[in-house]
Image (cartoon, rainbow over all chains, first blue to last red; front, side, top):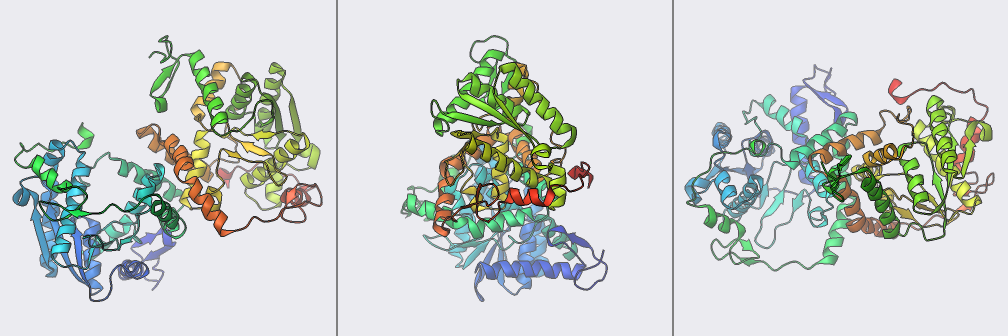
Length: 314
Length: 314
């Protein structure tokens, strides 16, 4: 097994590209794929300030590392979600990375800042944990990007993630979600521009990137996500990818090239955009008087903390 | 486990409907679902003559049986495809069913009528077997329907089939196929109307229907289809259906309700319809001077017959 570029011994095969790579050329491949995504979809202009949503997992740490390597001014933001050891370990990996690189990292601990944590908030508001977690992350990432004057907020969604989300949206033909499932969403209405520069990399590749770069990341999946639908969609697509390498790439990029516009046009025709006001508590863009996050905090702060209860254990 | 309708002991559970059924009420459910599909999609008007494409498998025999039971004038057409024992057994089951019901069955044996068989034709024309088989079936079903003055040609595609085809078309975003993947296609350009009255039944249900009705059918899958992509798509969807019953139904009918029109509009905008002439050999509608089937016959007839070579054995 030889590197496609230099013919030295390879350390990884990438079936989708029908090629093997040595360490250095694999790392270069990863950087090139991120640079290509940023350029193709106009995610970040030269000189713009970037906020990276970091979880401490392979994807967000690889993304941060590649952006710094490509010369972007990229600061990190990590949230203490309060999901037991999982959150502690995730934050520790993030802090260690930032210190080693001398990169700027902002931290918000939910318990310190809002007197909540994800398991307790999910329980108090009768939401599934992934829903409470998702809305919390979106709210705080948006807020920090806005308040910090960042030009763009980037997240570590990789090709497997995006293909699985697309699959879920297609299975239910959620045409409104399909109209917005793009690798970059423009700024507007008080929200920062949002981009997913890892859409050209599979999760196996971001994991290999971290290993080869010596970046420690949290290997476990979130214990609250076990058994959720998204993982089922990933497995279904994995089975097709195994017998036909490149299926996920063709699925996701074929969607962008040939179908996304059809859904965008369908939605534009069907409904006008709701006018966004501002949350009376925090000032975030909101259709209601008080935004969803502030309501979550109101209903959860001070509630008896609940023990971790993974989905699988129900 | 009790029947949802009469509370007598049930013989089958249908998770998608979250219900169990006794023999009689399950058979009624199957008939009702076919009748509903025919009505909802205006597949067959009262008094119209129906040609059923029969393979000898569970789906087409169940379809034929239900249509006769619903009072339609439904004749069968079975093709001798020359795929070894599989074809012989399939035809034998079909003939036995027709004789037992006193139903009218037409038979075309490819070797007798055209001096070809599917394995030989696939080999001679360097097509994958499923491609040679598919074009042969489409051509001959269309021809018999046209020459016999039938109003509609019906096929036994069930919900699992249609969901798997839809999944394949979506994975590659084949927008032209998506624009035409409908349960009924109107007659036109020399083609008969085509309909799929089983789209509301899963293949497990058509199998149970045949068993409960005492209809013998060929149980084996076609040996040439083993390992093809379509079966891989079915397995991927099956894995999602197992954890979330009703997924396939929502996927297929959601497509018809919320997405099919978008693709149809996209295609209509993009291209005019090619004018169809008539094949110089057989008179079938064709964009070329000689239609694909006649060219297949020309290149295959008289060729040394090839032994059966299942895909898996390559």
